[in-house]
Length: 146
Image 1 (spheres, rainbow, N blue to C red):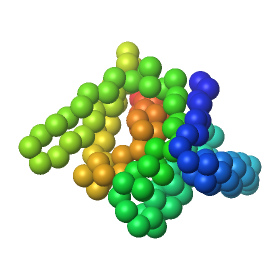
Image 2 (tube, rainbow, N blue to C red; image 1 turned 120 degrees about the vertical axis):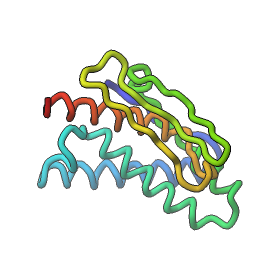
Image 3 (tube, helix red, strand yellow; image 1 turned 90 degrees about the horizontal axis):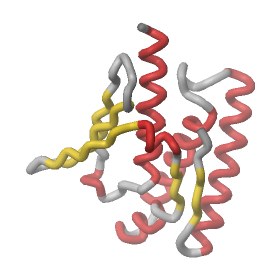
Image 4 (cartoon, rainbow, N blue to C red; image 1 turned 120 degrees about the horizontal axis):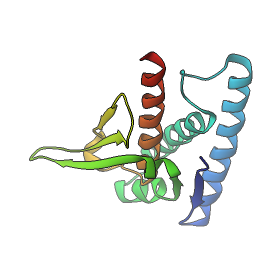
């Protein structure tokens, strides 16, 4: 499963994201060599994606306005073939929104209900791929436990 990372937006955001990605790759690779996976079932890419998204949100929260923070968050898009291996159902209720992620044709059936904090103000497009990867890792862990 090969994921793609796309940088877009202003050059300063592209450069910052490339630097954050490089640092995340080095950090995760070194930690995995010394201690193994962060969690059973998590592959290297899931760990790098987790690290880069955390760094990105931390950086966005330091920006002075929500529109600029959202623009920064969407300046990197992580697209993964994992999206084709999950079903995503949007949940829209009066007071909140969420997304159901479930593995296609998997037993045991694992479903992740994802409520993004912040009223979806900071919902980077990359999160769909990340949650799909998380769902598939959960499916793999459930299969091993079954």
